[in-house]
Image 1 (tube, rainbow, N blue to C red):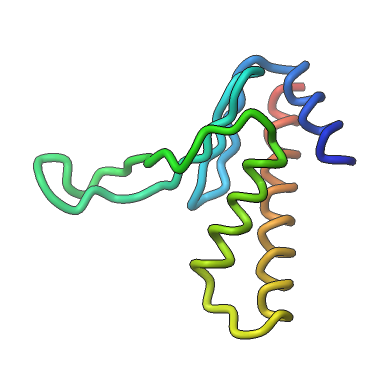
Image 2 (spheres, rainbow, N blue to C red):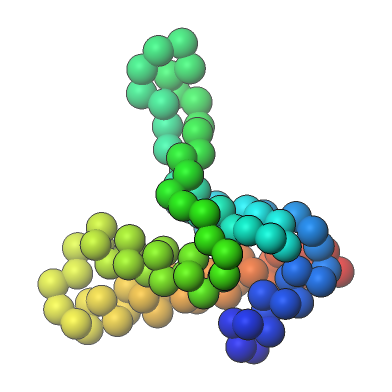
Amino acid sequence: MALSVMTEELTMKTMKLNIDLGKYVITGTKHDLILSERGIIKEGENAGKETLSRIGYYSKFEHLVKELCNREILLSQARTLQDIQQHIEALGMSLSMAIDQFVESKS
């Protein structure tokens, strides 16, 4: 399914988007998308609790996906183009599965 078709389908089925990718969470409405990263608070009274740090706001799903890929490539241990390709393919599969689960949960 094409990315733009999936985005339209998600927008039509729900006004609130919440896709869990493990390390990342995608949330939003029909007007905007937010990419956040999960983390654990290290200090203070909330130490040990999970938190979400916003990475950015996006008007289009494809912009969010590009940022996610760029971020993951820069943070990866990839040493060759083949390593990068495998990393992107794994990320794509993870994103696809998370979207499928989200769509199924709204059906």
